[in-house]
Length: 610
Image: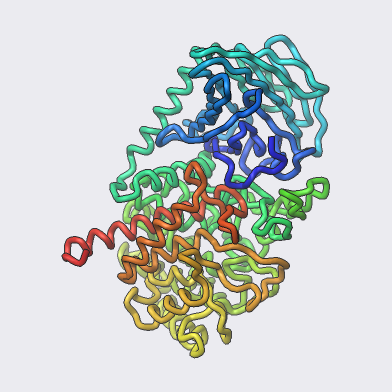
């Protein structure tokens, strides 16, 4: 068991309410319950010695491992090869079919030997409440119960004897070719009773039921382009990172993983960002997942309705998955952090920031697709209209911007562009569906913003739109300009901006957000290229007709995903994955880029240009 495996050395499993990470050594080193944003039970990824883990792997020298997903599912298979045989650990969590919040969540770990004979051992060492809570073990022949404040966890073994190890559990079993064993880890409320024991036959039936569920869901996708496997994996990942009871996606499954190993850029991403969720609507609609896209739109509309009668901003930039706006940030001083990357933060103080771009992304989401826009309720539209009325007087302010800088508010160009989008989409909705609104005021604001951006956001030095008014720093967030329609893909001003980004931000098809040295963001250290931005670059190239470099960049990015097709937030200087993992924003941008590039390539082929 590595002290700190590479961030990329993980697969993701989940049940649409929470998720766990499993290394290729068979170690669950991250798991929070009962929700994504709940305290952890296993967090060895952030503190090897004290965070807690659940290891299930073969004993013996010379072991090699390979990890893969069962095709088009969230079922993770870790295959081990030793001198004596070949065996597999199969991990999954039953997906939430009812979309009802529950305290009970179950992690299945099945073990089978396909050749020879193998000895498997397990260690189950939960550490409740980010390893701040103590637990007591009640071990009976058929079940181990870990009792902690407010929560109970059960471990049941099927053909896998369990033994006490202090207040933890370990065990061993020897399996021959064709034999199957399993352990089932269930978390529940403090007064919960143990689940009914399951036979290996019943567990096998449940495994195939889970495989069938996911493969049927993937088959409902309307995507038929060139990158079927990659897009399907990203779609499954987005769904795994969505809290089914509300339809709200989290930014990532983890907290505290560093953007620079040893640095301080370590954030908690287990919340729902208005920006990320809103852009996911387009990605989901591109794949035909109208129900999933609509669920988030309803969640977003509810946040707007909640703002009625509340002073201040209509929207917060992020919320908990149930819409709770309270995300107080604190530091877990007792965690050493991934490879010493401290501080480890829980909660997110950026929730109090002013980021005006979120109104553009929100209206962009609410206006996507006739299926969603036409279905907007009267109350929903009134909330949107009130938000636009407020924005008329509120858009022309400095803010912290899309990248959540902690160096003070500035006049960020991207924020103004997205305020333009808010008014533009509001006007479109009101016009197309004959909805009441202050269209003349919105139109005046929209036109004023465009003129201001083109005048004050333009750098003569770079011949490009830049990060903030009066500066010369390029910013990859502006790659969204042609997608949202602020400038046409062939506009000379946009093409020269794209050229400037290629000179300053692109490194062998990988894209930096911006240069922190040239535009200080209030934080120490550096960062890698942002995978989100790399896919936005592909999308922008394709929209602008630069198909050869777009396809090259897209194919190149695929070589940076991990062994099971997942992306973290960043790619480091040695090609390593950095930041929280896996990141939903990256995978939704992959889907958008694939859809745009497919369409552009098909159009070019029909016109005989390929």
